[in-house]
Length: 139
Length: 139
Image (cartoon, each protein chain N blue to C red):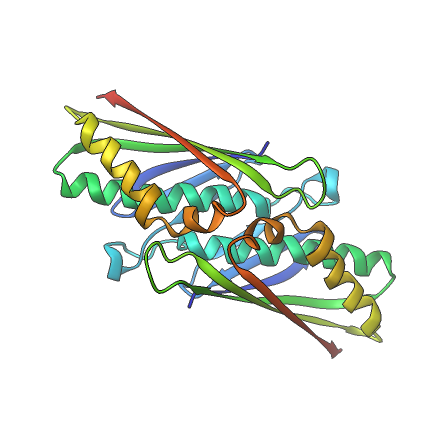
């Protein structure tokens, strides 16, 4: 059961530490009374979906003996206009860099993550429509 | 529109950087082929809900002229047994430390965050039942 402790520091700055022993600083921007010393809480959700699916995709491509030399997920979120501004849409572009990468292997790895493995996606998709594309770059 | 870029580093390690200019390291544990050099992606969601609601609660208590000397949110998540293990429940305990803190002010600030303001809560509640309690500690 994942756990996190979020402690108030000063201004709008908070530091979160989790079960696994790592800390993340969060802060609001100056527009919301903060000092921008850390990530916005809503940004953490986008980071989470990128990291979670990235781990799936990298693992699967390694199993499929693909020669991956780089990977990036570009994630953007659309929030509802009205309070409480939940995410209504999240778009992810996966960029897989490598040598002789199989399009079929990439397509399958992304699909497996989105449909079967990624816990963050499976949590967020109940609020936000998740859209994704991928692009292979020959290295 | 919030954005994040998640880049693969090595093993199961990824580094995410967001629009606001901050970076977060994510990694899997040794049980999942990682080296535990950063937070689990699913932990980021718990950190996010704690930070988001913490900012609301602190802001409201300041407006209500409450003498808050400390604040902590303890967040835990319950994941579904089956793949993709989405969050089905998230529990938060808010601990507000201060001098002559009004129970009514705390209750109201927590309610306002949960019902009206917290974007992370509003996103996650479509997958997970969100439970919360609060506790005031006299300083």
